[in-house]
Each structure stands twice: as structure tokens, then as C-alpha cells.
Image (cartoon, rainbow, N blue to C red; front, side, top):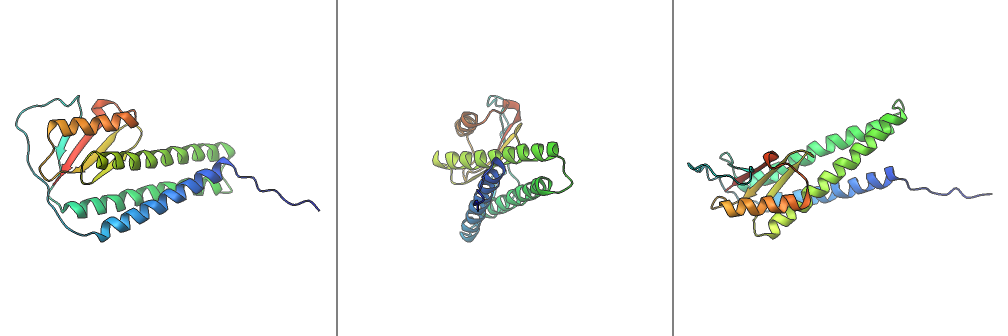
Length: 181
């Protein structure tokens, strides 16, 4: 009698990778939310008009900084989980056509790539000396929220933009950098 062989396809690899990323995100969220603390935004605005290469620096609203970053990570993870769940439902659904399953698999790969890029960018920005940050990518736009107790200066915003553009391809006018104190 012949033993059945196990074939691991792209779909299984993508789902396994997404599961690992989800587990890492849950752990990071737990670690960040357990640290506690609180800060508030600068609320400062600069009266002069500055061109950061068309990237925009925007001060955040009044909120507790550590709480903001913890909540932002939870919200981002929840949103991604819903998207992944929808794609998994399509891929495993009995009534989906092969074309729909292929599109769902491609979308899952894109979501997985965005999650990986966001995580990498967050780590690079922190390595550049910023205390904390959250990066949101959707393929066309990039929104970066950075913890900056003194408020970002022009050179710091340019440094963040350089880090971003070194990793992803986003038009200058679609880059938004926010600072939270």
C-alpha cells in the first residue's frame, strides 16, 4: 500500500506566515500594553511653511502617548485580522471560484507583505533613535506616528521619510508623519 505524500503549497506557506506574524503582533501588543505610562501630544504648530519634500508633519491630538501606541497596535491588528479572516473565508469557501480563490491568495500575500513592511519600518525608525512609532501602509499611502516628547524637527521628519522610502515605494504627497508627545 502506498503512503500518501504531503504537498505544501503557496497557500499553506502564506497562511503559516500570516499566523506567525499574527502571533508576533499579539505578543508585541501584550508587551507594549503591559509597560504602562502616559504622555500627551505637543499640540504645537509651526507658523512657517516648510517643505519636507512634500511629506507632511502633523501634530497629533491630545492623548496619552503610551496608551495611544498600544491602542493603535490593537486597532491595526484587529483590522488586519478581519481582512485575513475574510480572505481565508473566500479561499476555503466551497462556493468560491478558482479565480476568486486566486485573487484572495494574491490579496493575502499583499496583506502579509504590508504587515512585514510595517513591522520592519517600525523597527528601523526605533533603531534610528525614536522611542516608539506605528506605521500604516496600504500600498499607496504611508502614515507614520512617532513618539517625540520634544516634537519633531525638520531633520527628524526627513530622516523618517528616508527610512520609509528606502523600504517602500510611496509618492511623496502620500506620506504623512505625525508626532505624539
